[in-house]
Amino acid sequence: MPKGKKRTPEQWLALFEEHQSSGLSAAEFCRRNDIHPKTFSAHKAPWNKENKASTFVKVEAQTPRQRPSTESALSPIQLSIGQLQLTLPANTEPHWLGLLLKGYQS
Image 1: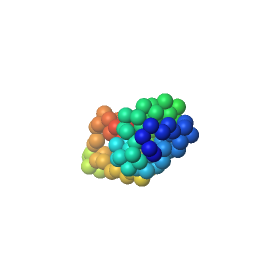
Image 2 (image 1 turned 180 degrees about the horizontal axis):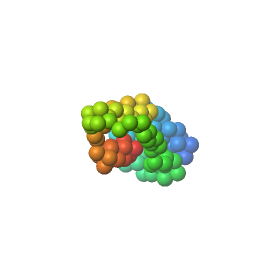
Image 3 (image 1 turned 180 degrees about the vertical axis):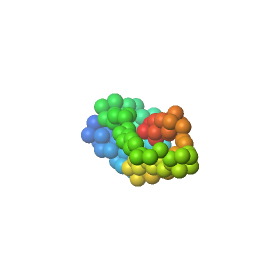
Image 4 (image 1 turned 45 degrees about the vertical axis):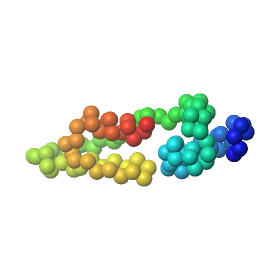
C-alpha cells in the first residue's frame, strides 16, 4: 500500500485476522505486508481489548485409585493446546507450570 494511504477499519480488521492465522510474529507480518510495526500495533491495541480471550485454561484433575508408592510411578503431565503438545515430568512444580501457561497465552 502506498505511503500515506489510509486503511479502513474493515481493512485493519482483515489484516489483524490474517496476522492471527499466519503464525508469524507481528514484526515479520508487518515486514511482509509493508506496514510500519508501530502503526500496526497502534491500530491493533483496541482490537486486542475487544477480542481478548479468557486467560483461564480448563484443567481436569483425576484422582488415581491407588496412590503410587514412589514419585517415579506417577504419570507425566501431558498438555495439548491447539497444535502444541507438551509432556512434562509428574514432579513439575505447579508454579512453573502456571508461568509456562501464562507465557504461552501472551
